[in-house]
Image 1 (tube, one colour):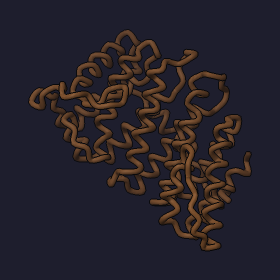
Image 2 (image 1 turned 90 degrees about the horizontal axis):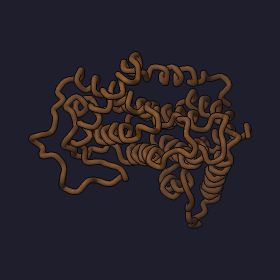
Image 3 (image 1 turned 45 degrees about the vertical axis):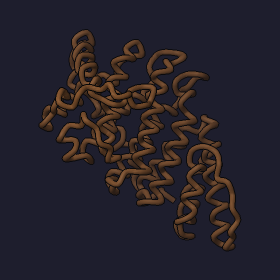
Length: 311
C-alpha cells in the first residue's frame, strides 16, 4: 500500500544527528560542570519535580524568578540542558534537573500557568515545542547499565505521560506539530526497540509502555488530522525492525481487533456496548468510536492491517 511513497527514516535520522550541543565539542570535565550549574540553578524555579507531582507552596517567590527575555538566552540555556540529558547514569541528578525544566517549559502547550516560563517560549510555543521535543530523544538512548536506574525509567515514563497529555488536551497542535510529534515517537521507539536487546535491560523494561504510547497517540492523530502516506510508510518500515518484541505483536493485535470490531458495528448498525479496556491504544477506542465515520475506521483498519503483514 505504501510502496509508492517516500519513507521519512532519513529525515528522522538527520534530525537525531542534529541534536548535538556545543558542549559536546568540549571534554566532559569542562562541559558537565556547566550543564550541572545551569540546570541546578534553574530547576529551583520549577514547580514540577520527580516523582511527577507538583511541589507544595515552597517555590521561589515570583519576583526572584530568573527572567529570560530573548531567544538567544533561551537557546543558550537549551544547549546546556540538551547536553545534560546525554550524561551517563551516574549523573542522574543533573539529568533530573534538566528534565524538570523541560517539563515546565513544555507545559506551554497545555496552557498551564507557570511562573518560570520564558517570554520567547510564550511567544513562539510551536517552535520551542519542536526544539525541546527532539532534545528529549536523548533520554531514550540506552546507557551502559543493567539494570538501569529506576529514576531514569521514571523520567522516560514522565516524557510519555506529558506527550499523551499534550496530544489529548493541547489546543495548539496543528498538522505540522502533529507530524513532528509522530516523527519523534517513531524515533524514540526505534531507539528503544531496535536490536539487540537483553532481558531486563533498559529497552526491555520500557518496550511495552513506549509501544502502547505510540499506538495510542497514532490513533489520536488519525482522529484529528490523519497522518500522511509518508508517515505510514515510515511506520511500516520501522516496525519491521521491532518484530522481536512480543509487546509490539500484542499491542498491534489489540488495535486491529478493536478496529475490526468497530467496523463490523458500523456496517451492521450494532448498538452493542463493549468495555474498551486494556492498555495503550485499545483504551482509546471507547472515545474514538463515538465520532469516527465508517470511512475513517475502514481507512485506518486497512492501513494497520497492511503493516501487520510484516509480522
